[in-house]
Image 1 (tube, rainbow, N blue to C red):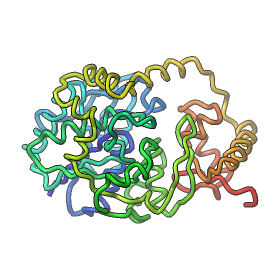
Image 2 (image 1 turned 180 degrees about the vertical axis):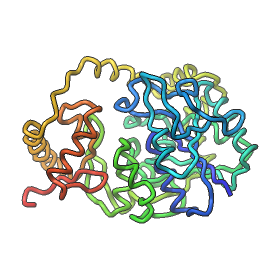
Image 3 (image 1 turned 120 degrees about the vertical axis):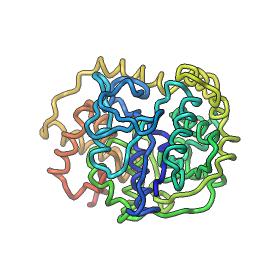
Length: 365
């Protein structure tokens, strides 16, 4: 049997899809994970999502959908986590190509359903911003989720909408989502994370990293993103809920507007009109800013005193954990130095590594 899991927002949602497959379906069924090639700028310095023409080595999965094998490569200067995911996960990684808007994604989904005849179709979002109306002041990245939601509600096949880790993306809080989420489907455990443990060592997703940490029992407040957003890690954090697909579309004004779009530019324009911004514009502006930065060299003598100061300030804010992405930015390092920073800190202070997060001990610890 084949399970189709659509990673609503790309990035870490694809990693969470692998964990979902382990938890709900086990090893008996095959999984096709359909996802965007849309990574953070530290992985892909080119703003926005990548299309099929941005890769070499893609393989046809169906007439309209390309598979990303381990040997595929993004064409420079673009970058992508998908080939490495394909190498380290047992699942088939398939590419959502959004260049033809929601109509194009709908066609890709219909093509997959026709050719694969999947036993089930799950649309998975980590955090729950797929359930946003579009006017929430905390909303940061509605476009990818809204495009996949718009496409999934138009295919002639049953789709189950699932939200993992309510509130973990920092866009809608768990309180915002409480009245929208449907029944509890599963609570992730440490055993569920074993299938992605190797991926979590290098993948930069903060929301999925927190989901895995919460499944492993981590609780507290985790500071994330360049702005240092505090995210509570509670007993609700490792949960997986079903949500009503039709109700989600009724709430999501952007998704409804996107249904007939045939280009990504058109979709982006609607995001600006309805939500007041486009996350690709944010990436464009940040990419220009990053080009002007000159990060210091990474060495223990300079980093550890800065880390001590950061941790003291974080403690005063009630923070107990942070991500290596946030640490990298807080210490004024570049995204390309994230892995080196991670290795340095784990080597020097292994007791503070709460995989995949960094633990900030209380002053008396």
